Image (cartoon, rainbow, N blue to C red; front, side, top):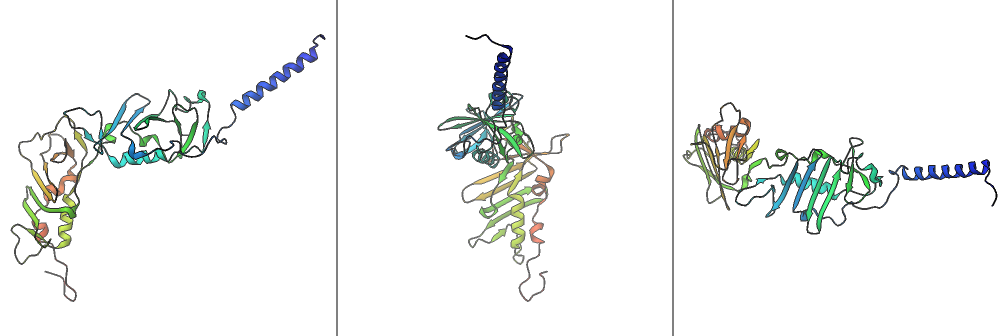
Length: 326
């Protein structure tokens, strides 16, 4: 064999350096232009088959949302104790966005980048979905701009950029998930109503023709349809501030307002209790809800103030060719 010369050694070292540089360039090439596949991130995913969702943030707290008899509740579900109702619309919206995630914008396939993009052991959100085909875990990571977020499906290494999704849509706070429409009855389904409050008592019922009649109503004072509709709309919906998780029964001796709504299938009674000292909110309890809740003064103002005069003083619509009713 010939002796190695300095020039030959330098040539070999240069070739090795070029090879190393080429390998480094290959490993750290811009991945956003690469496409490893097309189609949804979650293949054959059916959101309506998800039975539980657990969300964890980077600080450790987690929240569990569980489907019980087609209703979403905030876990854990404990035997013998009612569970807080969760907001089904909010959860459905989140699952729909997860189902829409695509594989068309690859950010990286390098595991060493996972923590930097917050989709590894360091993460912004970890979502665990329970389905009939097994658990699915999706990591939501950093947001390079307000339109995109990094996402990764475990145990895959590929990280993708997703649009129209944010970590704030997957909160871990219980208050962000509970159902706030505490009372929600379709006004057209109500067949009878009784309201008792500091202003008196109003009792309404539909007659055999479907027309509304009020107890004590003067024969010459028909109830205007628009006034009845407004009255029902005001009373058939109540949004709350929060639940009192330690209270399933009212703590007051006597409610300051009571509403009873009757439909063809159920009767719901809603009670409003007196304000707690030092708090500008009212406790409320519905017979259709498991927990006592609190509502703002604005939310209960109709329950506390509506009276028969609101209907009797309303003007009926004028007939064609006639002046306004008096």
